Image (cartoon, rainbow, N blue to C red; front, side):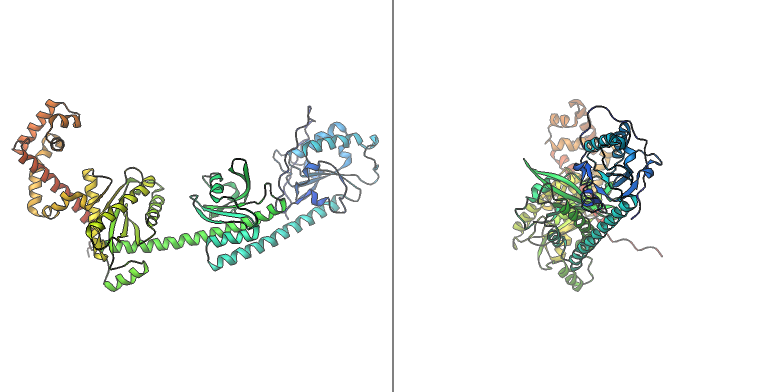
Length: 607
């Protein structure tokens, strides 16, 4: 055991006025022995004269008074140290209280006043510093620090050897107990049953109820103590203090340390708990909470539970890291399979069948493909990846029954959901629409109000998935261009669906270009929006002007310019239909062109 560094400060003058209330005794560290235990030794038995309220203070080292007066300091540099001083140092009554106060201020755990041989046995004798010792007794009682009056044979050598032996034995006992705890929990970890089994193993070692949460506060495991009624896990989780925004000082040394706290789980009901951060490589993975059976708990039980909590948090972190790696591998594999499905990238049916069995994908089933898009999924900022993963998991677990495959493709989330409505296409589309609504409600709190969910028509097998994905992506592009509803399907955009084949022809593209180009060239291109607003309001001049925030006369002037550019009266039904048709063909051509560029395979590198 290394000797702690110590320094001294000049004794402060005795404080006047009433003595302060004793400070609560700090809990002994793992390698420290309570003063109460030392008093049971024959050498120190019956020597306590003051400070009985501080018998639970921990002592890990003993120093003579002479070594505490070198290199003055300001902090509690004597924490866990018993100061051995001759009784003659307390002889002047006006200096005894100041000396005790100075040592207490520096955190001394106990004061050992030793009477050398030849000194009188009666401490009340005025010739032998009875008044000074009495002043020291009053100061020690006021501070709650044990003051011992040692006999002549309890010199510094004997007392320091005794303290060292007891502290070393205490450390060895804790080390042995910690090894046994670590071996028990490591065996559970080695068998691989997961975090719930680790929680039950910790309950068996500590007889405490155990709660394990991840870094987001989600409950991973709850195990109740068999001794008496267990608390409500929801109340315990709700009463937990908020985790620190970064790694607390308790884990900066690479180890997790338990913090004792009180949890108010109900009005008038308080539980004592040990909260241990689960940290791996400096990154917080979650928290381990052990709820004590009594409040306040027994000090010996609390010391044992600290050992169990710290070893348990370390091994739980290893299990969390392993499970995270497994989930990451599964998500990568699932993402590769989903991407191959939506793009039809299978070499042959045998490859499709082999991979489909691994992902529980029925090659003969019917599936609807949904595409989720939002600004929160764009690769901007530091948290977009976490948001994407969380949203993907939410979509994956939205419907427990049936097959659901999810993956993040680009800046969108693709959800493939098996439909069970039978062979009726109308029922299949209604089921797909209901799932899209549920998906939007579940993801909107995570991704924001600009969330859009589109879906294609359900289809059979891998070919139906590829066709549904193309339709869902096409619907997504059209929804952004036309300000459609946040949740819509390919069938909801029936006009564009009807024009899809027509818009692909060269004649249709030429018609759209020749119709819209004059409006876009004239007057900075704002005539197109003016004509569109006029048609959208069913030819109501006043309504269109209000929508655009424009004066009615200005609106008339703009419509006249549009009519001259189109070489036809825009107020006529034929001209409005031509403009409407050209605009829809142009929008559909733009969206399908962008989608074709995104879904096309990369060109071969030139040789």
